[in-house]
Amino acid sequence: MKKPLILVTNDDGITSRGIRILVELMQELGQVVVVAPDSPQSGMGHAITVANTLRMFETDIFEGLKAYKCSGTPADCVKLAKHHVFDDHRPDLVVSGINHGSNTSISVLYSGTMSAAIEAAIEEIPSIGFSLCDYSPNADFDHIKKHILKITRLVLEKGLPKGSTLNVNLPARNQEPVKGIKLCRQARAKWQEQFDLRYDPHGQKYFWLAGEFVNLDQGEDNDEWAIKHNYVSVVPCQFDLTNYNTLDHLNSNWKEEL
Amino acid sequence: MKKPLILVTNDDGITSRGIRILVELMQELGQVVVVAPDSPQSGMGHAITVANTLRMFETDIFEGLKAYKCSGTPADCVKLAKHHVFDDHRPDLVVSGINHGSNTSISVLYSGTMSAAIEAAIEEIPSIGFSLCDYSPNADFDHIKKHILKITRLVLEKGLPKGSTLNVNLPARNQEPVKGIKLCRQARAKWQEQFDLRYDPHGQKYFWLAGEFVNLDQGEDNDEWAIKHNYVSVVPCQFDLTNYNTLDHLNSNWKEEL
Image (cartoon, each protein chain N blue to C red):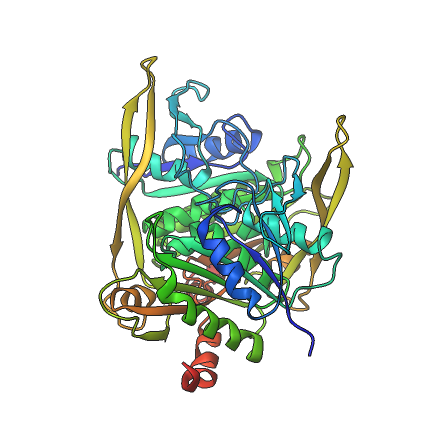
């Protein structure tokens, strides 16, 4: 049987530990090609490079693998890979990560990791974004490897419904073993931002984005609950942003005014 | 009665024609404050500035108005406005645009214009993103003004259900008058990208993102259809990306394997 062709990308950049571990894991499952940003792209959301040029160069940092570093965003990497690495042959799977830090709940919107996965979903290529809920540069990844392999095998075997991708978050290592894998919805939560106001050496103001995560969700069927209780969370995501409930509401309440 | 407080932002930058027209229109409806990017931010999706500092300076380009130019993305502008312009007083409405170019269907994901509106929705502030489907720098805006005022008045009077925002696209001027306003869902469509491969003066490769828009949707209830038929399209959008159909599907088909 032909090995599946797997594109690996991320948003922390091609030299991050997370992508190296994901590449090793994916080599157990298929033929791996890497196209990833040449520098960190965290918080890039679904940004694409439209008003600037893009660079992409081959690199030998992954022994024995075809790998490219790209000056663009994670979404750019998926687009460029499709056209200039695979020559319009489609990979069987796109995986993104392993992100150094959580992408649960509302963070999915800001996540470069997930934008690569969503970009693949638009192209109807099965895809998964993986994030470890640990920001430490020395984070331990060993406890999550078997869960990443399990989820990826399921996607390769069973596929995913068109128009969807998976947002997978994995708990940081702690005393207890991971309890298992939970299928979830996105938690209702937000960032309570604070901006740190400082002055540069020339006396001019500048700001640093800071703030804390506020979970507004009381449910037990969401990704925040899962991570807090030491489960791997799997949230199927879509790129149709239409709010159909609001559409119904407006159709009832605005119709006569329009 | 106290005039509503309206925050105006955009993604084309604070000196663009589109924002100037939106500011004029909003002054008919309320007290306007402008916080907008100091340079074009098209295609930024829901990017935020986490790994860099932000600048924000007052500017007098809008006569008699409080206005600030910000070095960040549209989402950054909304966040910064909330904390350092309104001092945590909330505006009654956030409007973004008028974007020079379409943000129908899948473009909503890449749109800086809409990321500002979505950012406001996360904060439960009613919000609207406006885009004119005309990329010409000399685009005519006169034919769409009354529609922008009508939609904005409706939102100010009736509010919007929590967790939703409006993606409003307006047809380019043509021989016929605009037919009216349609409540729509996001069309199923995608960009068929092509990258233009070129060589710089030093012989190194670079790429330009190009490509064409492909409408895959046969329906008549979507934003692409509306714009094509000379209607203003209004799509209510949400920031919960959970694909509940796929969640049901996985709950049936994966449960025993997890």
